[in-house]
Length: 502
Image 1 (cartoon, helix red, strand yellow):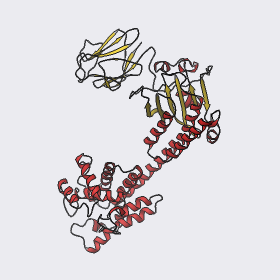
Image 2 (cartoon, helix red, strand yellow):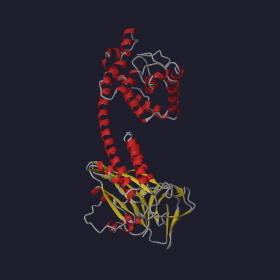
Image 3 (tube, rainbow, N blue to C red):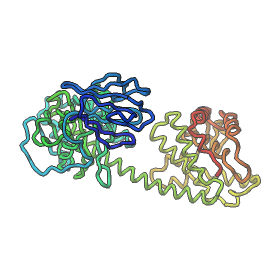
Image 4 (cartoon, rainbow, N blue to C red):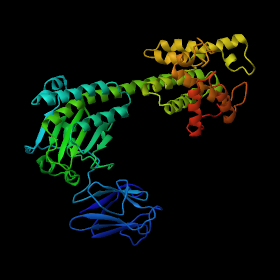
């Protein structure tokens, strides 16, 4: 029996079985499915069922009915379609049975495996697999092609540090290497191991449709760490009792574990619900080779992220130590970092440069830790000697950071964040493009937040006065490009809420 499940809206989780030839949906009580939703018309749409098809028809509703993101007047429904009506989204499923649960079932029996199905054991030590199994039973042309893909994958994914970009790239490479129509990269989220889709791809026959991943096949991959190729899952006896295989029209399937040593992190799932026999054993070995490198890269990225979290905590402690000395700059470093990120995004700063800029912005005043509180809190003008001491903070901060492993790039940016574009700044008097780009961004961000915050020697300035002063100093104190980027961020309301009294 066909049915609808609410996947978004106030009725989330409810299931409606389409028992009648015609089912109406709307806000009024005389509908078969009543939706309490101010965006739904009194009689919004109807779903009709005959022997050959299921149709949804919009009943001239105020806000329209949508199937997979497209307006539908009279549209045929297929298994897995998503229907949006007002604030509610329904997943349509054809046929009989129940929806998959969120939990992963454990298979204990070992029924006969059809000849259409192949399993590859992915070893904990993957060195031999890449060197031997990948080239087994390949034609020479296929060997060259696949090893070329593996080589490019390794070069790329081992350079990527952005976790989301890494996962998307892994799936893109795997999906484009075979004749798939749907692809998912799924990871087991710690600590409970809940499976979460992290990246997805669809072929041109599926547009932007979002579909569930059946639990039936991946559970074997997760439990045994085996890669599976099935070119007729509908008739594979191992999955005969799984309604999800039937309702999702799973035919040609590749499901490959993402492993690091003896740990299964998740899996790559690619299928073709249209074509039987869409994948070959060569495809299975190729995707397994990609997944081997991907598993190592994902685990490394997780470890890198953990190290970054630890570093962030240490940096937070350093910033707090500086700001504890001066109540007037409390929160200043964090605000400068956020303004720096906004400007960096506006000028499309590369990811690695953005990371350095963000860290340097957080730590740009770290050298003030050695300056007397009497000077920092002084309400009147500073003497020339006191000004000289304050100006030392850029170089002193850089010296502190250079003692920390892998912080040389950050130290360089901190050292030069008070250089002027015309060369009249400190500590070295360098100018123009000789000043690191991140330092030029921080210079503008620092001035903006300083002028729009209260200080012991003056009240904060209005945003209009602050921006006028920054524009006036463009080309002398500040890089004109960074001034324009700051103004663009203000126009787009990306940083106007960041400035406040400290």
